[in-house]
Image 1: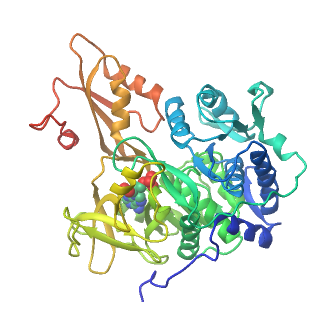
Image 2: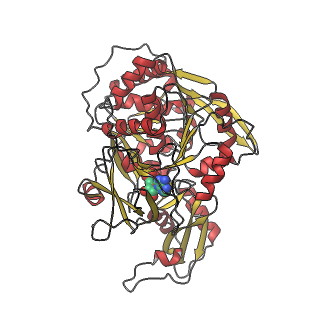
Image 3: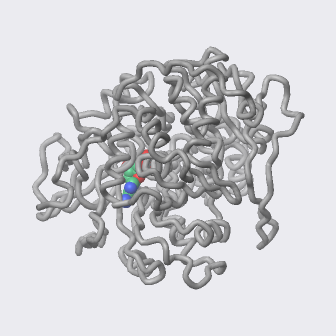
Length: 538
Ligand code: AMP
């Protein structure tokens, strides 16, 4: 029998129901570890409920958006649960985002609440919230680390009094007496729980709607795929704002009644220290992060002994690297494939099996369609391809998004009936293993972080000297791909690569700005004047 052929279903219809059951069953067991601190399920619930009461008081309720702009800190999880408790929709925001990006996401989602941390509030959010629909900003203290050369310093980030009158500290909310229980709104599996921002195939970032049903289904999938036992810790190596962290960490830990190990943000030495201390059993993250752990000079004997179940998704894995990592971790790294729109996995390598490698393309298989999931390869006309033939991967199943937030056109374009068009190009072999070989979308995949050329080009066009800009992904030994820009200049204007790089750097998250800029006399174009991106890439 094929590994994922047994149908599964979540016993819960909403994340709130799943959370309640976890608190009832495992209230006194650890749920969040963050450096020295450990919060049990009941303690997180207590905080989430006082937080939810505060949201209700601010008039935030069913369908309202609550933005979560933090690192991998406990306040993210508390804010998420509180938002869902009042029937709201959580909007996770990449903490690397700068002013322009944060403003866009708050405006597009229409968020009424912003949950953040002191450093991000001061550096970015305080200049932005005033221009948006945000009525309540909550800042949570946490344990952070900073790097001084090679040294990493761990410290407490307290919420200072200088934050302003319209800003609440999370601590002040948690210290309130718990009020009358508010009656949770009647939400169902179809209600949107989270908006995960992604650019889809083109254009501006869009909020992919992950419904309660999507999330509880893939929590169940992760439980089955990983075989995680209650109480076995999950390593929070992926960012929580990304769908992998949201589902493969938070939802799975709730479902399994397991602790989640948080380390503020990724640093190999800090993460290794957390591993030594909390002995996680399961990890899912981008291959670059796993590689950084494996190659860290801070590693000590036995560090990886507890990690018996390892998965990697979000970016391609070179087959030779999978072998090398298995040698270091002592556990095989299983490939897992999905996207924001599919609430994390649609395909996975079954636990205990090894992914085959395609001899022609050299690609490592991303696995087989998981439980209750159907996947097809289609040609340009939308007809099914024969095994071995390249086409676009389409997927259907209980984890697929209900569409993009307030964007019916993009939603219509993304679907072929019930099948989501992934924009990934691949094929299926005769045994049902799927492979990714290319992308229809122009997306650049830098260590699992997705960069959309259009966005970088828009920022380049904002520079006074730039006449034309085209951005492509070029191979990079560490990040997989990195960002390269080609520009032509307006006549009479002068600038250089360093200045253009600095301009981009000031206006976007660090993983997006071009690492290379080439100033050209002329852009290669089609007869109709379209820039030949592919030619530039080649
Ligand atoms: P995101 O929405 O950020 O999760 O990005 C989803 C995209 O990441 C997919 O459409 C793929 O292009 C890529 N991706 C995800 N998982 C894998 C994988 N296991 N191997 C190769 N690419 C992947």
